[in-house]
Image 1 (cartoon, chains in turn yellow, brown):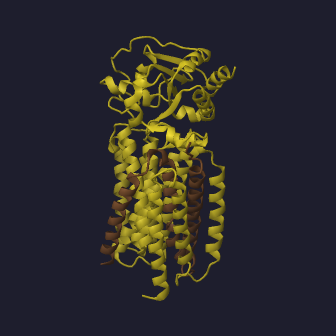
Image 2: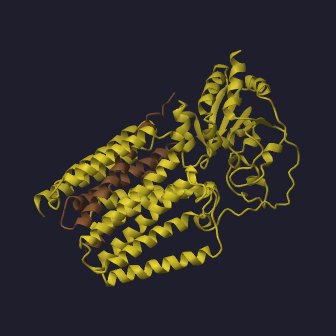
Image 3: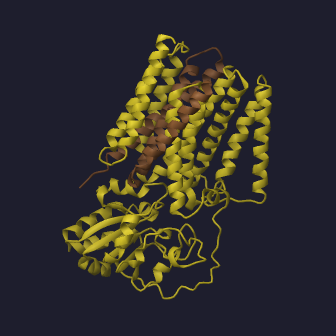
Length: 460
Length: 91
């Protein structure tokens, strides 16, 4: 092996070690930031040492591309609101997929895919990259609601969708095979690329809003696998290791999300959420609304309070007001914790980031399994903009569409306050018997306004 | 043989990834995902060889585009992850 090549590969080993160590430090909030820094250092040395590669003869294009990419990346990272992290991650998933697709395509055009089995690997890289790219763009459109006319945030299902998809897959295989046998005819490769992009759109379109956390996680995994496949194609160890780490991460998150919704991945991917609202179970009792002022008297006497946030909290931007109320309650001698369901929000860990932004200590953010066993001990459970994740029907109403899904048992607390705009049902479109329980009170209105008026009562 | 050797690395990396990421607490799952975005920008080092070689113009253009896109992932991913992680504070 040549000297520079040896050096490059030695530095790659160091980079891989830094990526791995960085991930290890991500195991705790107190070391996570250092972990991210180590990981970025690994990336930097890998990029710098790769510049020594003998194949690189001119640097103009590279420098311009890196400068432009850095500017765009830094701009987005600074500007994005943390409520919009799901959109940003989706978009970056897509960008990563497209980058891998371009590398693989460049390899074919440069004539480096010399034998059949290498050509097949390159095609696999193109396929994963293409599906990741277009799938992520659709996921982003659904999340941001930017193009509601074209892409509904719910599931888009039409007749014969399965047959159309089967035809697309068949066409992909056909053009893939043709391009392997006639590598000089680039038109087959282009058709292959186009069809993979179409397939990505078709795969994500039928998936509904409630399942977005699963889809983002899965596409996150694909973007890693695309890098991995590109690594196999261009014979690069570091691409394989880093891509595999990302792939594994996405797969783990996907499975956590699926478990938290009590659904299998196949169920999420291939069936829009069935609109089963025809359950013949009657919900007994009546909804009892309450004014924010009355909530104050209960909270003032409370010794322990659990807050259960959902996506509605992010929409109302109520996390800062909640933090203010938390401080007042603590000064009043009460214990305040937060109970966070794995699929609360629109991506894994979304609520945690928003609460961290509002300066809530991460030690107070408890997982569902930590908060449920002690639910009976809480004087008040405050549900902010969450619905399905606190629905007791999941526990005791066989036949309910969400039956079997693990939920936070807010109904078992002594008092439950539900901060909600109106009586609309959640993402899943399921009635929530929690609202009809004897210990439940609905406080209608904007969550932020409600919290602020309770805060005013406290300071008077 | 080279393909078998690379598959071996792939397999080991996947197992290692599973073990490491299982230990990441739920509270850090969003930064984990944006950090994963940054790491997937590793494609950049594969793209450099094409962006810096003018043998085939179209391949060079694709390579350059790939460098641009992957850099967005690397810089954007690491920076936004750092921004989030800085907010996670203890009492």
